[in-house]
Length: 311
Image 1: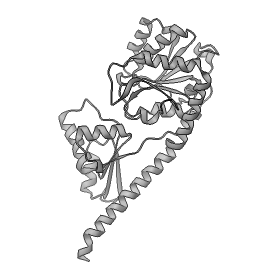
Image 2: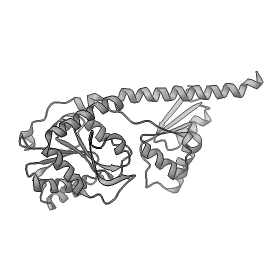
Image 3: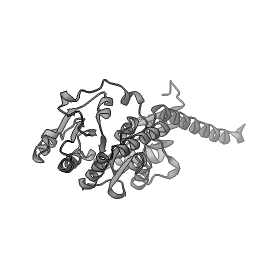
Image 4: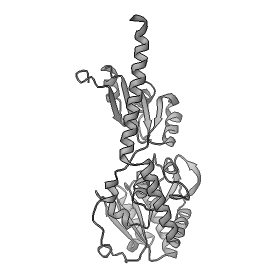
């Protein structure tokens, strides 16, 4: 860094070495972006994170207001050292890819499709999505659930689907590098997360003009506008995280949208407009560039004021 003399160093989920090196190299602007506060860190790493957020970084950027609040509470980080810049999604990610053939997926041409996308880990709530599907199937036996993503819970989830008697109604598609065709297949996108810093699947769903049914957790209410771009039926108020997420309100919201396809389409169209206004990757890049410029100018100004008496 001393050789390159950068004006800005930006770390993503920095674990300490990057910010420390930037300080030692006298880099004037040091930014770190936090995507999630990990819960399983040891005491030493938590102390390192606190050192970064409160001292080493010029600015700590959280991807949602909810996450910024959590950082303030957990690490006692002053508000003046925090900023919120939400992530963006490339339009090509949801627009690209060839259309899927429903016949190869054993899905009837008119069957409504629920989509779950994400890592198959506890926090993402794929098990909740299966429970939602079981409730939906009681009223809409023609409905199908497609799960894209992989992870350590896949075998357990497949066993859960069999135990619920819905294995024939669930398609586990694994990891998909081109998720666009899967979003376009969906009637409704389910995001039943127990913990979510922002909710990129909800952003992608809106980019694909699909209505979202999500949990009212973490940053999701900052993405999904209740009754405008989707539905947030559970829990009844915003929470940072939830362990016992009731699938029944989520299933009721899904059934309501399946019963009113025009409303579902209107929510999807509004979601697309919200994506274009707030979540395009180009806008995300521009906001970061503006943040760099702002912090650089402030730091230069403070340096000038410090040197002024000695001129």
